[in-house]
Image (cartoon, rainbow, N blue to C red; front, side, top):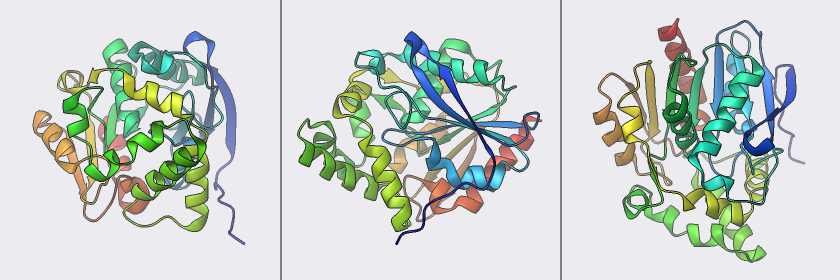
Length: 283
């Protein structure tokens, strides 16, 4: 038998009403008045991908994780909202407003980096204290954007978008296995595969249908920033984050040797220290 994954802190669950009335599942941990961290996952994941951060940080921080629309236990509208930057911005704004969180550090991983950029482009940074980008997607929907993705991942994309079940499931399994540099435990792999399979091929396709370039957003950000990436990333080329770092000379850059696309799981203790340091810089 494979042991079930658990979270070590009491959880408060709530439903946030996002753009177009979409119901978003939010999990809220830790002291309500503590310095806050909001974590935004990427494509094919859910809020519990941040389990190592919840366990390590929620004792002294308020930690909020959201299942993005079309993911996890959040509603999955059958419409074009996934290809709208304003929709993603409004969803994250709703999470911040309806949880009542005060000037959190907001962390975006992979596609979650696009979502955070959507929010900043629409609302600025007055309501947030700092930003961390973890192996972020910088661009989407153009040839240049696809050039920033690893070749091995690009080979999986057609299967992720396929509407035939065997092909879609096989591609999701490969995608999940490409993410970490340190292989998942069996329990983690089953959980991550389950999360990936909650996202329909239509939603995946719509998320990549929009055109978005976040560089112009990030260069204007004045709050403290952290850029984190692994040298063994098989989803986003490390050169993508390296070149973003060149545009942001004031950002702290944390490079995780041998980590994959999820340094927050591959090197969780170090990543959690980096997050604590970022929070401290915002106080």
